[in-house]
Image 1: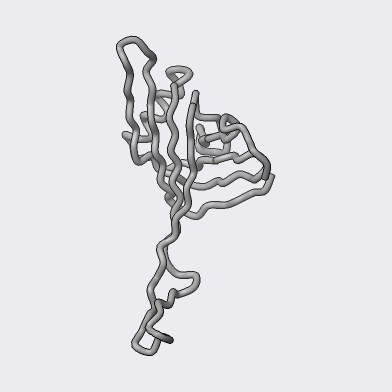
Image 2 (image 1 turned 90 degrees about the vertical axis):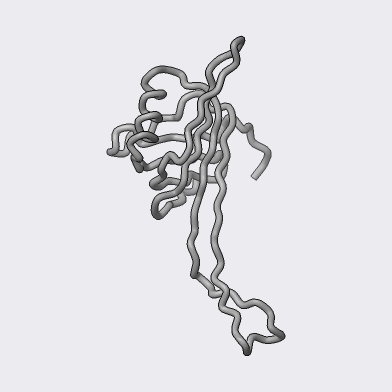
Length: 137
């Protein structure tokens, strides 16, 4: 994969619950991270007492974060209601020349900030809430 513009990494949400994905408003920065817990299967007879891990076990999770501006009242209201209602929706992260990650996420943090001489900004954090899929582009 060659160098890509950061603005091309898109965060989209299923806005109506039936698969209509719309880009989340005005994100200036965004990131996607994957983590997997390992299961230690080391026992008294492990060779040289080296740690052994149980293949395929453990919990996998993904986290998405972003920061930016709301483009309109509708996008602000949608994200805010997802947070306060604890809504789990399908989200999609589109990574240029790589693919799209899609699956259920819950808004785990929502922060608003602003300076007296600047615009209102927000930060959002999402945690995976089920199985994710990958589709190559």
